[in-house]
Image 1 (tube, rainbow over the protein chains, first blue to last red):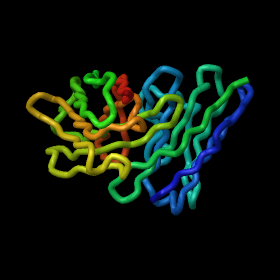
Image 2 (image 1 turned 135 degrees about the vertical axis):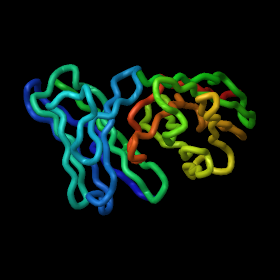
Image 3 (image 1 turned 45 degrees about the vertical axis):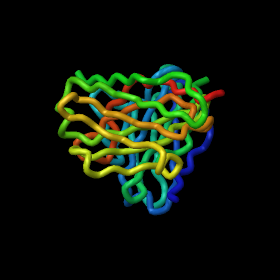
Image 4 (image 1 turned 30 degrees about the horizontal axis):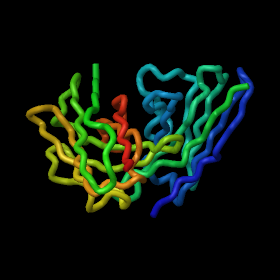
Length: 106
Length: 119
């Protein structure tokens, strides 16, 4: 099976840059995206196709993907960005999620 | 706007069956792949199943293969998940999600329906 590894937690101060990584074999050649999930809410797509933002997602969200690691970067992190973040990729015709990273803004 | 509304969740005994539904609106349902994703209490996201546009191609997570069946009725704009031989590990919020135009990403999610498997 294909595994995606994320750090369980990341902390950042307001206004600073948060980086969340997602590691997997040859991930740079996969179709990677990121979801944000706030408590009690459904996931929201925030980055797709490595570095594209859906309509309505703030510019402070960006993504990159190379080699075995994809990275979600939040510049000028705000309190409202505190949430769980999940990366997603594919293993043949099967969708795979990373274990999730809890972003704390403090 | 895109809306996905799941229903059919509830409390069910181990070994029993349950069918979930997802009513779609705000987009041309018959032209997008659709997914089911679940989330056990306090846990991460777990992908469950995908169906192609016409329902001819389906794939499942190993954890549900042989027990769950994903299907769709394009005339009713509705996605289904038939869950058989349920066990306590199937307890989760079940989300339906729409595949995007490329087919690689899940661009809209429903609010989820809770399934609790308990005796």
